[in-house]
Length: 418
Ligand SMILES: Cc1cc2nc3c(=O)[nH]c(=O)nc-3n(C[C@H](O)[C@H](O)[C@H](O)COP(=O)(O)OP(=O)(O)OC[C@H]3O[C@@H](n4cnc5c(N)ncnc54)[C@H](O)[C@@H]3O)c2cc1C
Image 1 (cartoon, rainbow, N blue to C red):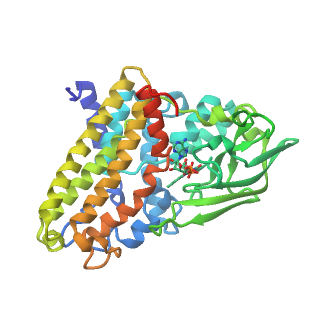
Image 2 (image 1 turned 60 degrees about the horizontal axis):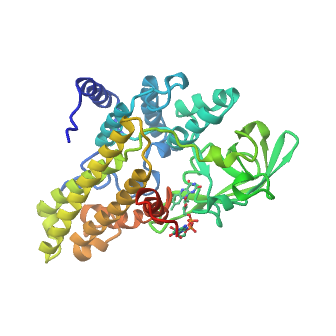
Image 3 (image 1 turned 90 degrees about the vertical axis):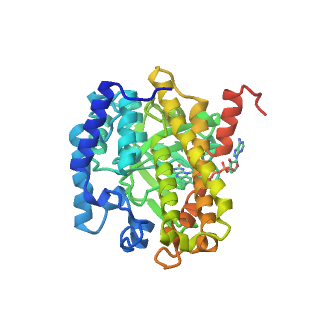
């Protein structure tokens, strides 16, 4: 298979590279944090645990970080590159499938943070398809400027894989809905300004048919966001409670009780997973490099030869994932929509991530268990043990891997439903 760029694609790649070279603030340029003698305060505990990333910088107490976040968002916005896949008429860049792939590949290679989060990837496209002109006017430009961040309120304590059994209730009262209930695992709600949610508006209807989709200002009276700290001591998500929250009817996207179909809107945007494939490749490269340094040899387990074979397996698997990303993009480039292939990608990528972190942890023997990234006994600043713990949820979110396997079995392999 020949994956080389056409002349037009090569020119576009050059344009993206030059943009990154000239516009990406230093703060977001990857440092060789694991190199022997690297300053251990850089990318250290405080940074990486709770405060790293563009979203956090945007809301940081530190004016310099806020300014850096704005500078990067402004540079991207000037090109329409906050939303490279959105149509131009809505302020996106309207890039073709191949251009989006190249753009994502170059951004991931450089470690540049994306801007816009769920606003760009989820709610923006949903408003483009189902929103009124007023809703487009109100929300799209503020997503594109990076001014407003969004969180997703779908899951509830009793509704995850079986999302349609959600119980958060919205009762119409004149021009408003009154919302009561609870969402859970709301990622980034502590950084978000707005929330999009699925709520039950008709409890009598069959479960998929009594749901509406609405957006709300997260600071509305009656909304409480309570942190959930994960087992790696990070704060990625929250519980979100609604107590008599008044949501204007004009904030409903789409028809009442048709919210399920609004909530499932997925546009045919670039979904190759190339960014994940690149970051695993980078991880493997860093591990291999560090294992060969004098500092790395100090930590290596005694029977290191057994680890070599595992490392080789991981390297091959990373290459497989990389080529799989090309497969997805070539499907899209032919105007088709990846179906069970997207499930294979999610399943394989998330499980590979867990395998890489396990192999990395094993390579260091007992040192692999040291959690304190500042300890002199922590190889690669405890990267692998943290990744081991941090990668656990990857097989759960975005549709658990069991659900992906169901999709592969029924749609991909044509097996009967169990
Ligand atoms: C890090 C993280 C971030 C998240 N962020 C968000 C967010 O921002 N917003 C949001 O709304 N939600 C979010 N979620 C929630 C996520 O979507 C759900 O956790 C996920 O859909 C699984 O639902 P559940 O946790 O209720 O598990 P359940 O659905 O109760 O599943 C429990 C187990 O049973 C298995 N199972 C369930 N049904 C089937 C079946 N039919 N066949 C085979 N096995 C099955 C599952 O695979 C799983 O192993 C996040 C989750 C995580 C871990």
